[in-house]
Length: 185
Image 1 (cartoon, rainbow, N blue to C red):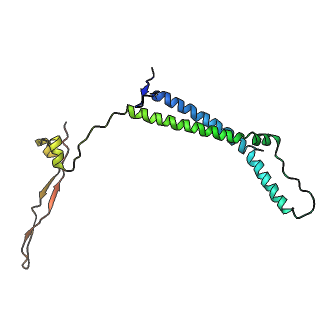
Image 2 (cartoon, rainbow, N blue to C red):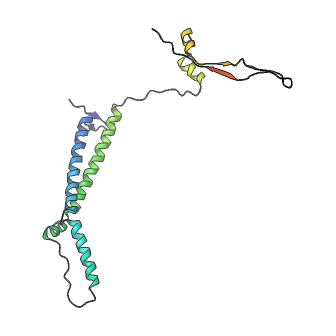
Image 3 (spheres, one colour):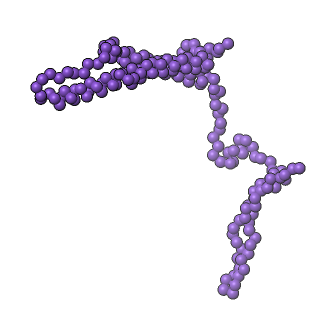
């Protein structure tokens, strides 16, 4: 059975699955409305084409306005006239906007439900140094096996030979001896 969540203000909330199903349905409705709007605007003989024709016609009328006689203006088809008179695009835009607001509300409910489901984070102490780490979690115990696997830094024993002008000296460098991984057979 679907889970119903209660918000902090006492409202009942549907499960995530239900919320996602409603969201998907609303997106489909919004897409259908926007497809219808796009079709009205961009189809052959649609509103975009009618606007272009009216604009071209007005530009031509301005050009020939100084000539004597009558100029016949572009008259849109009856379908376009009825679409403009009924303000179909305005109602479609309002419907799309209404569904968008509903989607925002659904997204907010999804976020709230997700926060209720997520476990609360564990309070992790802040560690700024290795000593703090060891104090909190303990110092690791070195066994012989682990010691062989660790990388070590050792003083270099190299002595640079002297000459008659300079005396010999020991190097101050350190050598890194790479740790190895023990292969057990």
